[in-house]
Length: 61
Image 1 (cartoon, rainbow, N blue to C red):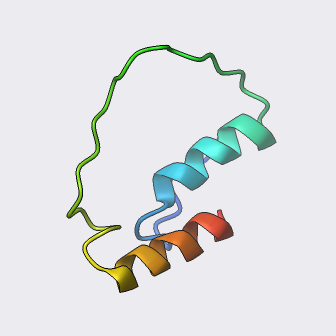
Image 2 (image 1 turned 180 degrees about the horizontal axis):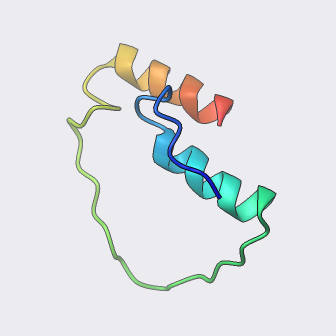
C-alpha cells in the first residue's frame, strides 16, 4: 500500500491513512473511546505559521 510520503512534514500520517481508506478501500470502524490525547506545542501547532503549513499539507493529502 506504500510508505509515508516524507515530503509532507506534518501530514504524512494523515495522507497515509487517507490513501489506505480511499485508494485501497480498507474498511474502518468507530471506537467510542479516547485512545490518544494530542497536546499543543508539537511540530504542527508550534505557531500560527506552522499551523498554516500543516493545514496546507492536510489539503494536499
